[in-house]
Image (cartoon, rainbow, N blue to C red; front, side, top):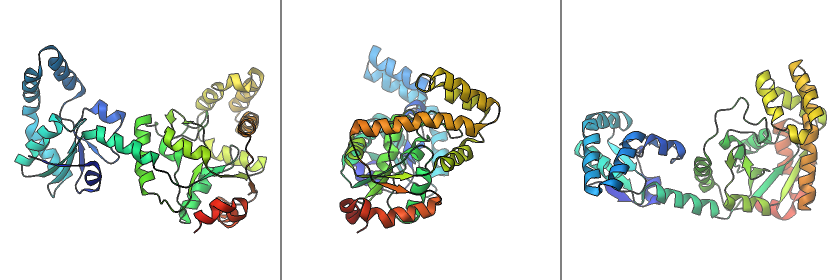
Length: 348
C-alpha cells in the first residue's frame, strides 16, 4: 500500500503531486503545482456520492470500482508521462479511498507512491496555520498610478522580501484592475498561493506588501494576513499627477473601449453621473488621459478619506521624476529615517 506522509513531509517530498479529486474540486482550489489527475469526473463523483447516501457504503464502493476499473490503463500511462522516475505524491479530499485506490493502482504498476495523511483538508489547515504565523511587514502606500507594483518588483530585484498581493490575484485592485489580465483565482486558491509564498519569506526582515483593502478584485485577503498588514508600519510614495496619468495610460492604453467604459460604469454611483458620462465620452473619443484625470479625482479622495478614517499619519517619500528602480533604491536608503524602528530590523 502507498506510504502516508504528514503535510510537512508531503510538501517537501519528491515527485509530482497528483490531485485525484474531481476537476471541479481542483478548480476551486488546489496545492500550487499539483496536477489534476481525477479518479472520477464531477458527474461520476456525484453518482458515487448519491449511491453512498441512498444505498450505502458497500454499493458506493462497488460503483466506484465499476467506474474507475476501465480507466486503470489510462491512469498508468498518464502517470508514466508525468513521472518517468516512477516517484509520485497523491492526495484526495480526506486522504481516504480515492487517494488510496489510485495509489494502489499505480503501485501495482511499479510506482513508488506517497499519500497525504488527512488529504487536502490537512493542507488547508496548513494554509491557515502558515498565514497566521507572524512576520515583520512593511506597507508600501501611494495614490493610484504611483507605480507601487513596479516599485515592489524592483525591491525584489534588490533582494528585499516582497509579497505581491495583486500579482497573485491577477488584479490591480481597482474597478479597472482586471483589464488585460488572466482570470482571477478563487479566494480559496488565492489563500493557497499566498501561504506557499508566505512560508518561504524570512522572519528576521521586513516583508514589503502594497497597501490594499480587504479585497483584491474578487479575491479576499485572509484575515490572518490582513491583521498583520493593519498593524504594520507604512510609507507612502508620492508622484506628480502628470506622471501618474502617464503610467495609467501606459497600463490601460491597450484595453478595449468597451472594457474601459464597463469599468468606468462600475463606479458610477461613487464617481457621480455627470463625471461618469464625461469620462465615458473621453474614452469614446480616444482621450484616455482625460478620462483617467476624472477617475483619479475619485480614487484620490477615497484614498485620503481612508487615511483620515484610520487617523493614521504615514511618512511620505517624493519619487517624482524617478524610475521604479531608482524609487526602490531611494526607499531602501531613506527607510531608516522614515520608519526608524522597523527599518533597523528590516535592513539588518
